[in-house]
Length: 602
Image 1: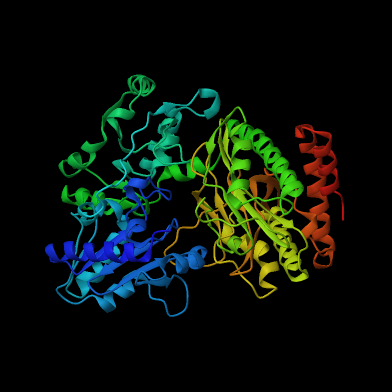
Image 2: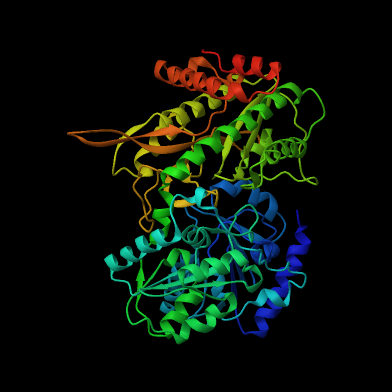
């Protein structure tokens, strides 16, 4: 963790640069030019100037104050990391906490200037800020990045080689996907489409990269018209495979850096389809300079990508079975060793990571493994490091959230283990979390439902305890791509400005309710589910979920008194299936005997 005095010094240096540019405010958002969730170290400006390491945060620096907005997943972590820096934590969603735009309208004076890097602000957020400041007579300028003058040892950007996927991994060719995309462009009346979102572009071209840790994506922009396709990619990343793909399908390859030079020169002669949530503000400003009409719609590729085809589904099922076996064998190791010998959170993390990466078709992890014991597990996105980690003790929970990037799928799974003797109240929490996960997993629902319709199934057992978890219940999962993808998600709260997506057969999403008690413990049980067709009758088409994750739920932490008959049946049925599917993967008699024991009916 960066020392508080270092952060205060960096902020003062930034304020001196702001004064040179006659700016009273500077804004930094956790993103890159492509609105990526996980970002290359080169773009971690907000982290550099705040010391907050969470994956979501917005830092506003004024001449006399600084504020950081983040969501409920990171409240505990942010409070700890911001301590002593002089930065005020703005707890998003809490009563009385203003949103960024509200704060700006209240605090910025007429005549003030707010600066930001337009490549690192989403188009929608940029427009909202511009309108808010214009209404009070203040300016929003997005042409300069002031952090470059202070962050002297900034890590270099990336341009890893782009590879083309083997046809047997794809199930659908680039040409087929492009035809579908152009049909959708015609349907909405778009003359052109610009895609900045990296995983959407990787999916469209059936390519992969290595520019962001754990996310097999390459920095690129794509322009599509009725008759032409242009892919802007890093020159050093263009492989012979990519050249061949471009030649075979008449794709124009251009240098990544030329994108912003070309934009203001082009008038597409009709509406440009662009997703303002997944495009940066500078791109929009340059398109408008070319007098282009913008059509703000979700990238069609996002929903196309979310609905996995038959080849992808077959590969995903195989990958999740193998990955479930790895995690199950790790849980056996933890039950045998944790609490009985010296072991840190990092030791456990390294053990699991090594076991996963030993698999012949596992290319990488899908995110940094969360390995947390006791109170650390209450921080949803806690990251143990050699310098900052806990010993795994006893009489509390150990939580592990992990996943891998395989040839044939991307995995994500969380389990919580009882280490030693668990107090009855904590067992109650664990049992009700398991009940919530199983309730959603066993849901049957009509086509047309969104994740908001089913969130209550997972959350109700926690709400019954008058508790809540300050995050969604589920997210989409990519195919050999980002571990988080949309448009599907599972959350309870209605947001007027959010885009909901109905759940469709072929979508993959997580089911991960939890309980997080600051200073005490954290519990999360996560399975990954595939949306499938269940039945069609006079009342409509019914859908259901097929579990992809097959990992035991720790019976040592289950209190049967907190399960009703239906919930108990769900748990026993699931464990019976886990035993049948995983037994062939166990490597020793001891592992086999343990698997039998931990999947016994209760």
